[in-house]
Amino acid sequence: MMPDPTDADEIPSDQPVEIEDEYKLALETAGVEDETLLEQPGDVRFVITSYGADYPIDTVISRLKSGAFFIPPFQRRFVWSQRHASRFIESLLMGLPVPGIFLYREAETNRHLVVDGQQRLRSLQYFYEGVFLEKKFRLTGVADQWNNLSYDQLSPADKLRLGDSIIHSTIFHQDAPKQAHRSLYFVFERINSGGIRLSPQEIRNAIYEGTLLSTVRTLNNNTAWRSIFGEKKNSRLKDEELVLRFLAMRARSDKYSRPMRDFLNDFANDLKNVDQAVLEEFSKAFTDAIQVIYDVKGKGAFRPRGTLNAAVFEAVMLGVSSRIEKDSTPVDKEKLRKAYDALLADNEFTAASERATADEEAVKTRRRVATTTFAGC
Image (cartoon, rainbow, N blue to C red; front, side):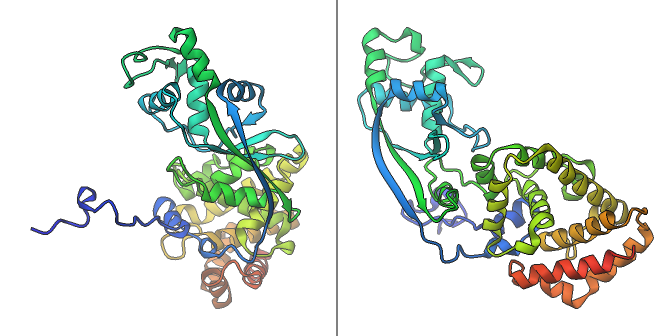
């Protein structure tokens, strides 16, 4: 009998394994149709300075404690098991070479952002601190001489051997172009020794952490939005990305240029620690618009073909938000319901929401048609 090609155990190890693209992942994991995810990176070139540095483990631990080596709080979660972490530490105790780490030097703070290698660094940090995910960290699944030992129980010689062990680091910073964060995004996207592919919004949360993205996460809990998107939060943060997209388009749609990814990245970077007054304005705009839309269309909002369409979400939210802000009178929900149905039946709007949706002209068209349609509601 021929092996079933769908059986993972029967697939030859030398066969390539396809990694799904972001468009397919968004559709399958979040039920979101977002054509902008099919965009190519564009004609981008970087001038990068990089160099190697060999750090003793004692120095690495010291820098992690001081924050000189910084693991973003919203980078990928720690996924190694205690056995996996133990085997890594055992390799160092045995004197074996281990994979290096990637660090990005922030020009303004001189801190080193951990781009790749957090599983290794956190394993070391947990071992030195003596706690692994809220329980005592004892080495497990290793050679008898170290099995079941905590850091405190290592012999003085083994502590010195571990502390003197070297981990190689590649440190880089961007010299050009002036948007210094852009190369960092691409490195996060492409370097993945941990085996878990980060989504665009996960990378933003790692790079641009601040008050803006904290507010986005709060807005993502909005009851009306959760009812529309789905009660369960998306594991790849597509729901958060849509909230960010509305805020970015509301603030800067007149300055939009493709690709959408860079537009959102620049917005998240430029406003990462924006004033509280601006955040309150953003919050009110999102909350008011999503509540009215939910009141009118319920869970079927933004779903012209069953799946949530990101371009429709963006345009409808902008149109309704514009109506609320420009007219202090309450929205006539029956008129809004009819206007919504008319908008989704509009050929010009449909074309701008289904094809080449990241193009500047498509973005302008969607917003213009939606804003005009909802103006009289």
